[in-house]
View 1 (cartoon, rainbow, N blue to C red):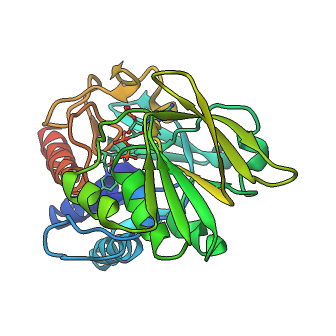
View 2 (cartoon, rainbow, N blue to C red):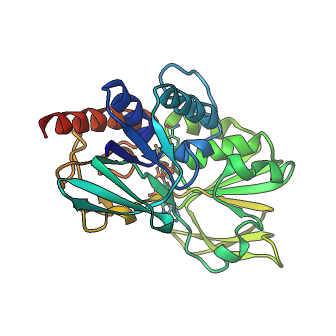
Length: 302
Ligand code: NAP
């Protein structure tokens, strides 16, 4: 039986694996996609201690290698349900594979929020993207827009500004959630134009996106911008499918304090999927360490 099953191989999950292994536990990390989580889509990380500037992919890769060097096991399977059994837990993956564990750390993070407007799905991959790092190169010397006002949107816009002839940032309010340091850079970047307070109202184009109709959030007037690409960066939706009914949630997030302890004994939560105020790489890593050490204590008390 696995001592600590970690669900999700993002920063929180991989940090949990490092701490779990260093405490001598058998740790298996389950991941339905690729390791790294959201950070892989971050072009440049400039606020993780120890790295003045590093690409999200390189940082994720280095955490992965560190966990592997400690013999953490990685299983690429999507965990769809977790149930209690004989003082432990059974995790069920795609194709019905079952894994037994003494404790579980949920580090499933979150998935990209969609705008929820007409033609969004149809034009995804035809001008609409949710990942500037992955798809930015397709828009070299073209005009793009980024929807959103958080760190992701502004980082994406800065990255795209290095590739594209022009980048619009579309945000529904005049105030931004993004760090001031990023905003200063964005305002100083010649080919970035900030459009506020606008919501993305309609998507236009024959077969692929050619323009976006914006609606002023205050006076309702409309404005059309011609773009080749629209990058949607309006936050995430917590990924809690696997733990429905197992742990208490609040506003969609798994409820836990800074101790990462959930309402279900033996289940811990780390990273963006936890109720918290600050969702940063540094706090995800912190959660991973705390959750792993809590799981270790739980096992030692069994
Ligand atoms: P976020 O901080 O939640 O920002 C989402 C943005 O999208 C907000 O500006 C929000 O507007 C807007 N928005 C939400 N729903 C919308 C809708 N339906 N239509 C239009 N706009 C909408 O998300 P994020 O930027 O992805 O960042 C997520 C977390 O990761 C944050 O804690 C962030 O600090 C962190 N992060 C950190 C780093 C880093 O450390 N380098 C990099 C990226 C992200 P309102 O402001 O009006 O609500």
